Structure formats: structure tokens, C-alpha cells
Image 1 (cartoon, helix red, strand yellow):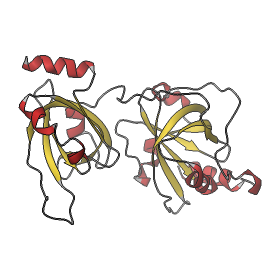
Image 2 (tube, rainbow, N blue to C red):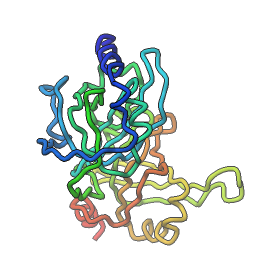
Image 3 (tube, rainbow, N blue to C red):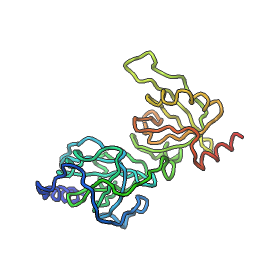
Image 4 (cartoon, helix red, strand yellow):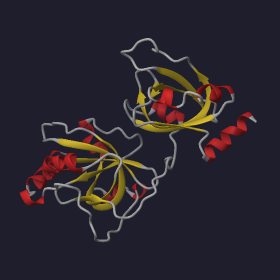
Length: 272
């Protein structure tokens, strides 16, 4: 484990001054790209290529083995995976990568997230692997147009979220709205307005979502009708709060009312 990090750090130290990226460079060669769902244990420590949008870019963090940066990536199927970079490569990515933009990741190394569990940095629920961006990797603006889907390939089950999720993990859920609270903290200017929304799945299991601003005002006229008529909502990129036993929205979350998904059609039939 320590040798794995040392190898990454040594590779990053070999980066020459002329190799630094002052701006993202477009790669013109053609590479075999893979999807995140095709990554498996057989590819551990192998180099792969893929195209993905940077959904989230964290700040550079210090660690005893060197600085590192964490990215959350989304591929063209809506599947998320995290990427890590250490040393000089970390600083290059921090300077050049822009959230919300698509990139080609060339010659990145597949890692098993549980090998670096001690870092406590991984937040994508259900993802077993991560991408290690080394000094030998190349990250460039994606040349081919990629239509990134609004919805993920699959939603998390309520049982998985309640019993197997870790604190601060990001996940996606879908369910029928069965309860909506009043808006809290409307008179406390130092706190953001919020409300609690309870959703139910096909197995009659309940999950509570703590919906915070700006999602309260963004859907101001949709919350009450959703509870009155048992409408379906999809909560995307919501964060687990294990201490309170709820899901919490962040500024990256999306709330979709009456989503065009097979799961939503099946749930509508429950109340017809």
C-alpha cells in the first residue's frame, strides 16, 4: 500500500518543468475508450482511457505522503467514479481542470478504492474502483461530443442507503412523495431555509430527504402538489447523513419531478 503511493509520488517527481500544463491541451490521437461499468478487478493497476465530465473538483489536500486532489467524474452513461492525483500532477489538475467540463483521460491507472480506505476521501456510493492520474497520464479537453444523461444508469435501493451507505456518500434515489414538512428557518437569516421530504418506494420503504436552499425556492410551486397527488421525484447527487438517518441535498444535487424513467411509471401505477 505504501509502495503504491510512493510509486505515484516518484512518478510525479519525474515530471519535467516543460511538461507542466499551462492550459488544457487537446489530444488528437484516437484511443480505445472504455465505460466505467466495464472496469473490473482484472484491470487493477492497468492503464485505461476514458472520457468523462468533471462533476466535482475538491481542493488540494495535504497528506503525509504528499498533496493530493480528488475529482468525481461522470461518464456518458451517468455512472460516477472518483479520480485521485498526487504530487506535481495534483497541482497541474488543480490549475487546469474546470468543473462541468468534459475531458479525455489517457493512460490513467485503475485503483481499488479499499486499498486507500485510510485516506477517507471516497464519497461515491457503490463505486469499487478509482482512477489514479499519474505523471504519465494525459488529461485533455474532449474532442468528441458526449451527451451526458440527466439520470444515472441505476438508482440506489432504500435498503442499501439505510444499512450500507457511509457518511457523506453521494447517491441517487427515486420514490413517491408521501410527506412534505413546512419550510424551516425562514426567519433565521443566518441559516438556510430547508424542509423534510419523505419518499416511498415500491416496497413501501421510506426515506427522508433534507432539502435545503436553493432547491426550496427552485421548486417552490411543485412541492405541495407532489405530496397531494403522490407524484414521483428523483433526487440526484444527494449526500448521506448517517447520524441523522437522512439524505441531504447539496449545491450539486438535482431534484427532478415526474422523471421520465421506467421506475417512475411503475410507481405511478401504485396510486391509480
